[in-house]
Image 1 (cartoon, each protein chain N blue to C red):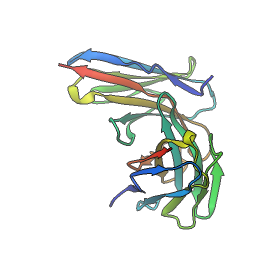
Image 2 (tube, rainbow over the protein chains, first blue to last red):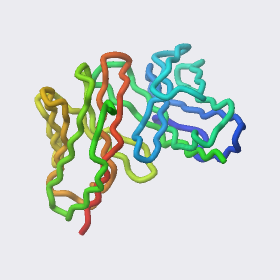
Image 3 (spheres, rainbow over the protein chains, first blue to last red):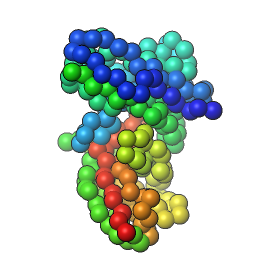
Image 4 (cartoon, each protein chain N blue to C red):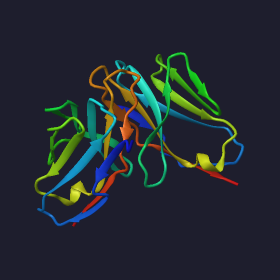
Length: 114
Length: 110
């Protein structure tokens, strides 16, 4: 049981390049989330998904797209990377939207955009 | 105003000390609250949920004050291993969405 995994762990991009971050969970969780974490800003929700085939915008969705084609995977795409997207990206999942459900986080992807 | 705010610290305390963090939230409709712990360059991990009646887990005690809209975390008998960033979070009424505070840095020294 690996929990939540993220690929890649590190990446350096040039401005304008594109990339996809992969999140996978093996806990059969319905809900998945993408956050970014910047110094002094805490965790901010980018997009989330409440089930296979569904996605929704979070607090800071601009410049990102997501897809949830399979229940266990949640992809985050950057179509044209900008230096402002330099951050640490965390994926998380939870079983449901119950008030007591824990969110489990992946180890993070450290992205630098030059 | 941020939906969830906490004092970023840093808090520097000696081993054995008692330390308390507060976190305020602005959305009175928030239903669920949590404290997460984050070690340097690692992912956040759930430390404890915060229940209306307050709850305790070993040296850790969490409290919720709905009237004043804040949650607190008390750590007794601090250990070196408690050094980390502590994130508070509050959730609304839909889709388990949590809003996180910016984190409070705790350093416990010998």
